[in-house]
Amino acid sequence: MRDASTGELIASGSAPHPPVTPPVAEQHPDAWWRAFEHAWAEAGAPKVAAISVAAQQHGMVALGAGGEVLRPAVLWCDTTSAEDAARLVERLEGGAAAWAERCGLVPVASFTISKLARLRRVEPDVYSRLERVCLPHDWLTHRLTGGEPVTDRGDASGTGYWSSTAVAARERSVAEAAPTSGPGGYVESLLDLVDPERDWTRALPRVLGPSEPAGRWREQGALVGPGTGDNMGAALGLGVGPGELVLSIGTSGTAYVVSEAPVADASGAVASFADATGRFLPLVCTLNAAKVTDAVARLLGVDHEGLDRLALAATPDVGELVLLPYFDGERTPNRPHATGVLAGLRSDATREQVARAAFEGVVCGLLDAVDALARLAPIGDTITLVGGGARSEAYRRILADLSGRAVVTPELGETVALGACVQAAAVLDGAPPEAVRATWQLGSGRLTEPDPRVPPEELRARYRKRREREDAE
Image (cartoon, rainbow, N blue to C red; front, side):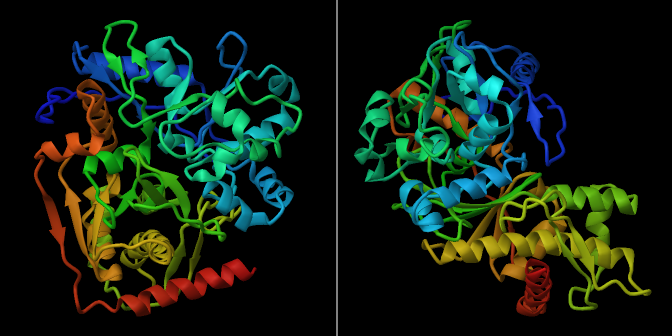
C-alpha cells in the first residue's frame, strides 16, 4: 500500500502460491483469492481509497453461466497446448506473418487463445458450459467488484485475439460489443479459428482505458482500477519511458521496451503487447530464468548466496562448458518439449564452472531476446534489471559483462505491485498513470558497469553455437 500523492510505502504483505511444474501448470483461482486475503491481513487490512490488481499474463480462467469457475486456471507457463498453437498458426491464411499483423503475436502454448483451443479439443464437456473467458487479473478484479468481468488493453494484448491497432476496427461485432478506450479491440476472425460456431460477444471482458475504474470494492467501497498484466505493471511502476530497456529475471525471464508504436514480428520471438499507459510494450519472454539457477544450486548443494560465490569465483573465459537453460520446455525459442543441456563437460570441470555456466546460459538467452527487440524498436544503452534475480550479484555482474552495458538495479521493492499502486492512484485522481508515476520521487538504484577484460562476444558465440546445434537436432 502506498500514499497516493507521494508514493511512499505504507504497508505490505505477501503470501505463497502453490508450486507448479510444466508441462502442466494449473491453479484454482480460489488460491489467488486466499493469497490476497492473507497478504491483505498481513499488511494490516488497511482502509484504502483505491486498489488495482496486476497479475500474471495469458492464464485462462473458464467461467460458467453463473460466473462459477469451471476448472482450474491454466497458467501461462503450461505448455500442453503447443500442438493447438501450431494448428492455429496453420489455419490462418498467411501463417505466422498474418498472426503478427493481426494481433501482434504468433501463437505459442503460453497464449490464452492456444489454451482455449486445447480446452475445446480435450475437454468438450467443460467447453460446452463455457460462458466467459477471463485472465487472472480480470478474475481478481471481478471478485473485488462483483460486477461484470473487465480487463485492460495491456493484458488483453497478450491473449492472441485482441489487436492494439486498427485491425480490430474491421471486426465490428466483438469490437463494438466489448469496446476499448482508444485504438484496438478484439479480433473475432482469430477466435473463429478456435470455434466458428460460437458467438464470442458475451464471452469476453470489456476493455477499460488506463485510468478507467472497474467499479468499487464491495467490502470497502474503494475505487477499483482496470488492472493489468505483470509486465505492464512492472513497466508502470518503474516509470519506464520510450526506448528504455528492462530485463526481468524471475522464475521466467522477460526483456521489454516501451515503444510509441506497435511492432510485428513474424518469427514470433517478440510479442507486440500494449502497455498500461496507452503506449506499447514489445516483449520477449523466456520460460526458464531463475528456476535454472535455483535448480543448479540445489544440485550443487548450496544456497543462492553460495551459488553466487561459486559463479563469481570462476574465470569467465576458461573452458567450453555451456548450459542451455531449457529445463521445462521453452517459449523463446519455441521449443515446448525441450530439456536443459549441459555440454562441454571434462574430467577437470569444477563446481565454480558449472555455477557460472548456469548464470551465463540464462543471461545469454535474455541477450538473444534483447537482440530481437533491437531489430524492431529503438533501445537505449543501459539495462534496468528487476525481479528476484536482480538481488544476485552474479546475475548483475554477468549481465553487465556479457551485454557490454551498464546495469541499473532499482531499489523499489516489488515493481509489479508498485505499478498497481500507480494505476490505483491514477484512477483516484483521474490522471494518466504515467503522470502520477512521474510525481513519485522514489530514488535511483545500484549501478554495475561491464568489465572491459571480459570477452562478451566470444562467450556468447560459444552459447549460440551450442544452441544452434540443439535447434538443428
